[in-house]
Image 1 (spheres, rainbow, N blue to C red):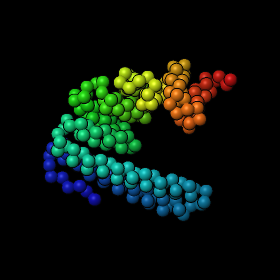
Image 2: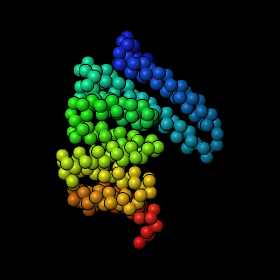
Image 3: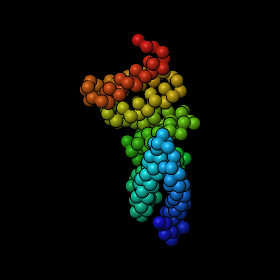
Image 4: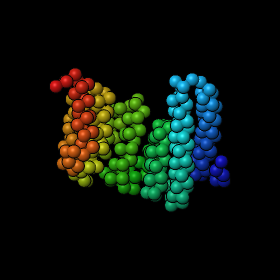
Length: 231
């Protein structure tokens, strides 16, 4: 079902974009449905492919519903003004949903949120740090500009360490993200530095036997494996 468009402002443009996305999505789902039907006629050894196709369709549908809900939220918050904090939050939410299907669209909305937050809250606010982190995640997932990802993760880390503390649980995310990027770029020595910081915080905050502490140990072990340091 299409959303009615009456205005020519930014909200109208957003709704038109949503309608176009719905049309593309319906075409994709019809294609998946047709292909799934053909696949069901094949032998049992490809039945898992049918299941995967159906799951893909379900995932796309769920993402579409989430995106539609966030667009409705944005239409409500825009009445508060284009630079209202709630508008920034709506942009960020839409960007995070697009992060599952379209990185460039995700960045477009995440950067809109960042502009509002930097202007209203300043570059050193925790909400601004959230924008930095989300943008960094999108660049990391795109995989074509790890330097940009690192820049935003370091901004996040700096804000959270200064406002919260060096061993606050919220510091774990940017530390781990930085470590992940360094692993991707094969800078294993530096990656270990950040992974060990994560481990120290997890042990202190969560204890030695928490699953997240185990995950920190696993990340470190993987890096040593990549380095061929099997001891």
